[in-house]
Amino acid sequence: MILWWGKKKQPDPKTGETPVEPLKPGEKPASPTASLDQQIFGNAPIAAAPDLGDDPLGIRKAAERIAAERAAEAAAREASVLHKLNEGLKRSSSRLAEGLAGLAKRKLDRESLDELEELLITSDMGTKVASRIAKNFARDRFERESSEDEIKGALATEIAAILKPREKVVDFAEGPKPRIVLFVGVNGSGKTTTIGKIASKLSAQGADIVIAAGDTFRAAAVEQLKVWAERANARFISKPAGADAAGLAYEAVELAQKENRDLVLIDTAGRLQNKTQLMDELAKVVRAIRKIDPTAPHDVILVLDATVGQNALGQVEAFRHTAGVTGLVMTKLDGTAKGGVLVAIAEQFDVPIHFVGVGEKAEDLQPFSAETFARALVGLGS
Ligand SMILES: Nc1nc2c(ncn2[C@@H]2O[C@H](COP(=O)(O)OP(=O)(O)OP(=O)(O)O)[C@@H](O)[C@H]2O)c(=O)[nH]1
Ligand SMILES: [Mg+2]
Image (cartoon, rainbow, N blue to C red):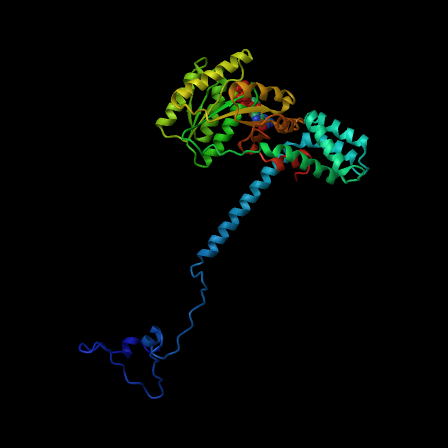
């Protein structure tokens, strides 16, 4: 190969042109349109550059690989969430499945429609839901024979249609800042645990949270919430047992404003002497936080324990009127065959359902999806 400093001369200072070395015998001249390389290196053959395509540094390939890994992780997470819901609802779904198996492979007649209605009532869905579904089955499937899966599929569709208008996933990290969320419900329904789970999830997504231990009646309640707050890396505010819950809620909102936090999650007591006292206490908490933000609380979440079955309906009624409930969470669906009560609630009350709880860990609280829940409830989830 001829190196350019052995081939070319310095530019002529007058013309600015660089005289070219005369060609050797047999050497062909470089074309005026020759590439810079050819002009520099002469006519010696240039080794072909490796074909790097349009992704010379492999950046696109790496990005594609990362995206594929992320998608696989998300799919695995989703599969595990589904698995937990299906497992959690096993008790409810196996009761239904047993009954539905009896309806399969025979013509749907009056008797089997009555059986279906009875089954739905004993699965806590309530008489209205039961008769509506039985009527729709009579309209669409009368005198027809269906497989077990077909019957389950049809039932899941009916249930999903009742649940769908109540499906409302919330992202508490959005909206007013600080967004003030009050958790209410009778004792043991799962308020404190639900706050802990929500705080864990949101804080992992970067939300700046204040948790207020508004259940000032029990020292153990404060300790329980403190453990969750530490786990979630949230700011925790509490007072000694017996202190004024409304005063604590006020201070929590004040602190969140001062520290520019995103969210205030306020726990409340569920264990007062009677219902009137409990409702009075909640009203006092609401008045206190409204002194700082007249639009607060932005959410009043009623936490319901699925194991109480039909009693949950009375709780929705009571809290809806006195505490202005804006949404529901139903917990302990993993410990009961009474999961169908959520369908009865959806049918009876125009209140959004935000989450369902199928275990005690943070990941066991799941955003409510009408279709997924309906399929899991009839045992078609997996
Ligand atoms: N299996 C199961 N247990 C749950 C779920 N949610 C809450 N729990 C448990 O239910 C029990 C009561 O929950 P808490 O969060 O303390 O209920 P609370 O409403 O704060 O109760 P009070 O403070 O007494 O009013 C605890 O042992 C929780 O671990 C759930 O989805 N599944
Ligand atoms: Mg509690």
